[in-house]
Length: 315
Image 1 (tube, one colour):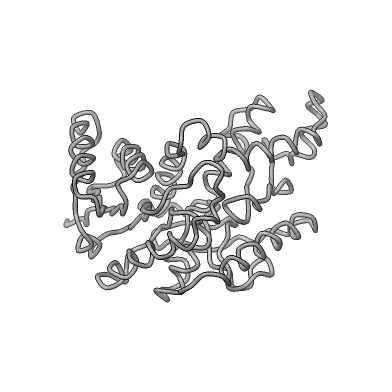
Image 2: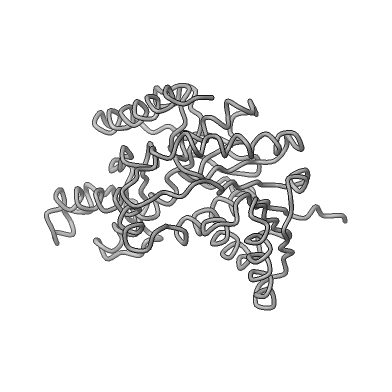
């Protein structure tokens, strides 16, 4: 039986793109990984360096390529863009990276209409929206990495605080991947017990005050990492592997990717992160939760922040 290889194309051979490829090659998910970058010397060097580790990983072809490689790709992941600098918000990057993403999306679309595109470049919600409007593909085929990493940070910090394995903590960060994101406490639970009921049982802390500290730490994590070491890439690389796994294995996993909303949560014509069912063709379904009023207001406020930025962009 002729089995089609699972092929992933990564546009951008910087720290994020290569951290993603490094993590992906160790998982055995893809049969072929293609890196594309405008800096040919950097591209060739990264591919050589990654390839030298192949004796220690599951079999996979890693190569430097171009946009023609998108023709038969299952997934195209866009990480290329200007880097966020210390003291700079993700939204400060918007116009420069919008132009970069447009220059990437157009050659992809001229070669295939069948792949799934994952936008990683920041500000990811803005760029995911612009890519959707630019290409006009079916909804769900162009998604953003969204708050998958923020959600992982949230779960990690909750697990440390509550002294429970992170794999047994279920919680979500919704909205913008940035300063206006919200923690959906109403959806957080441990062992099936809502966090608002679990914390009083634990009795180790002033849980309401702890909630505020955790949310602040999650929201400011990227800024602290950038101040310390200049950039974030390991966490987002692993988050992208999780998204890739859900797509290539058609898992129907629930992940908080950035999605184009068309009435869900009372929002229309905006991209932000909500729980989505992710499978072979991208977003298979958007899960709507009956959020309490405070969280609804936070989600709407996040949408307003993004809409104000979109209204200023030259397209």
